[in-house]
Image 1: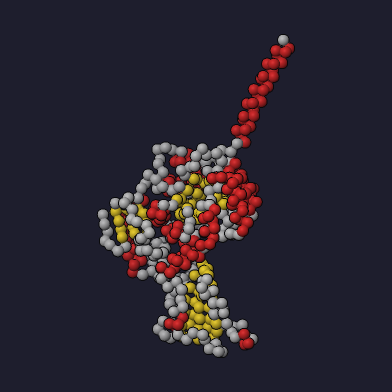
Image 2: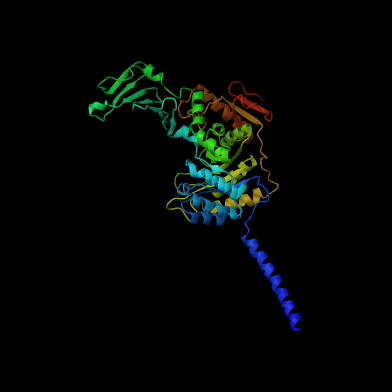
Length: 456
């Protein structure tokens, strides 16, 4: 009898042990997707610590499947990036790290190791930020390998060329050319000589050159100008970051986000572009620009919901963010991310508040997991065609071209053409460029061409 009771007790113990082991194994096994998702939903973490990153992952892991690490503090700390990547992937998420513009030799071995370790749960690398937007609105540096010149495109639209001998030529947006020359080595002076040349042939000397200026006329300087037209500009834009893009592209997919010039970002080497939605720009227009570029060039695209305000509360309401995510998804976006910046006085989860997390949770539950809402159900049937290489900002009629050339009559015509198409066709509009490398698509029923009358 005792032996029988012993056997029964042992059997019960073994069964209990198996059940407990199974439960623990289930708890410790990360939530893994059985197949690659059709849509990636997540948060861009911009905090400073691994601990805060893990805290955010714990909060959102049940209703997101991608973690974008966009920390300016951590991007050179490869062990910390790996730790957060491990944590996100063990939580069942995909991982997308950003390294800013930091591309050095250790990153090559690190990427190879992480691809082996994480497999396809390492989605790629988010590289740099806003390459097109910076051409429009910021300072951008270039190097000319043929002359050794260092060239800066300023946020004002000026082109500043610094030559190896110290001469600086500033081609101003208004057409004037400012020449600055260093003092002779034997002059014991560190004050540069300066002269301004005008297109009408006149000039002004602001500081006399003791040995005379190296250039005497406006035309002499104009003959040396770079960025003379949109065709030259686009080639310099492509070549500026080519070595880094080639390196990253040989390793993995390359992502970034922008608010303009998506067509040219793709051609510069990016595999996936995220349109920054949330600024006081038309979401319909932004979707038309990015979806048109992606569809024509057969690339993936998405949106990142960013700030509406430059001060608290920074982000739009949760209700509006939910609407923006849903609209982008129905228009075909594959990546849907909310930008979560951390400031000194922000809460435990950065600038995102509870209403924003609720918006993402609702989007996951009621849209992503809802078979009645179809990704890409809002399709484009109308195309607006811009001139080849015409990097116009599109935000207003007077927006600059490539951040260098003033708006002109063609810009005004394009503005009216684009607004007409968007008013009549809304989210069914794509904006593309006239480029012989990309044949016209037959999916469009309506075409608004920059050279022709409206066709219907």
